[in-house]
Length: 89
Image (tube, rainbow, N blue to C red; front, side, top):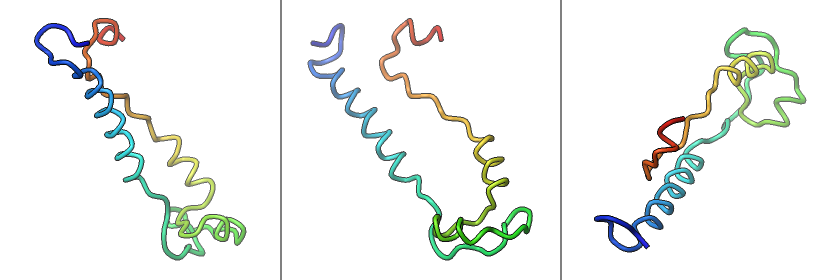
């Protein structure tokens, strides 16, 4: 049931669109591919053999990867509905 000027099923369409957008974003995010490097691309330290075998295509050592991951910030979801409560956060 939609309210106002929205047609019936509009809320469900918005929810489905949000889910589809997030799934597309997750599928676009790929891990390392190709051949692993023997030395880190950032600091030139050797990458341990166990890491190269465990993660094919690895380019960074553990320390540099931790620094890279620490800088990553999750992006907030899209507020398609525009409710007053979600706008106050």
